[in-house]
Length: 341
Ligand code: PMV
Picture 1 (cartoon, rainbow, N blue to C red):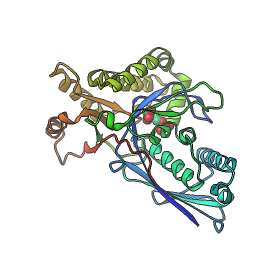
Picture 2 (tube, protein in one colour):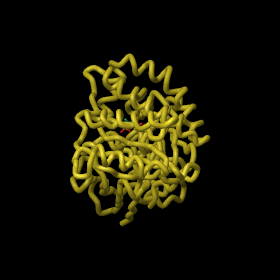
Picture 3 (cartoon, rainbow, N blue to C red):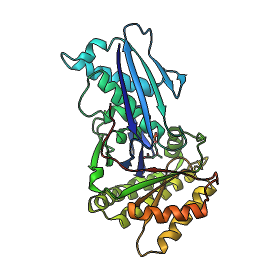
């Protein structure tokens, strides 16, 4: 039996991916940019085993058996096995006819809008690549599990290029800058709710593609300029611009969700209270000190520089006192190290 265990981190987008031009290959309508969190804070841990004694492929997520007859899982596994077979003398080739068992768990709430599928699929694909001895870029394979998973395979600041090839070969992730480039950067995740979201990202974005006029405008007129500008801000360590773009992109993404019919409402009253608080906090200074972004859920991810953490935590503790169940803090740091085995 061959066994591999890997850990992969979550990534939080500052330019959001929302909308696909190809459902099966998971090709996005726009580029996106994210930072990868420290592995110890929020991660997926996955063990893959291959054995000639296993009768079929099986998977357990957070201790519960799930079906392997899932298009996305199948796409990832088939592509890894195809790449393993392509390599001559590959140890992966000999085991690629064996069935596998997969056990995966997250150390944070699953499907609560905290990028659990990104960490999960990045981890699975990384582990499978180790098992089958597949090298080279595997972000294009992780993308076929969950789009945003391709960004979790790199540390620091990462860009997922939408690409233009019909087969998706150029829709891959690349690193914009390692974590060491901007070591003062911190992410504070405010867990407002750990409940599963009612509308999955996949279903939500498909509804947006079908019904939102604002999504078309966002993709053609806003995201390309924002992506270039935020990459420049990251390279220049210009926090003020980075913060401005991050808040605007999060707000526009949620505006697209509301423009979707029927609307997808992901943020709640506590999320909006956090938005107002951050704007008041920033107004007290000349430049932005903190920025917020919300994925498809009510939980806030705040980016800020290390020097600001004690002051912001004091304010947060005052507004949302300890023991108040509406907000729980989790601190994460973007790290350079990527998925490790
Ligand atoms: O990769 P998915 O299908 O879980 O979609 C992720 C969508 C957002 O988290 C809202 C945005 C992003 O770029 O991560």
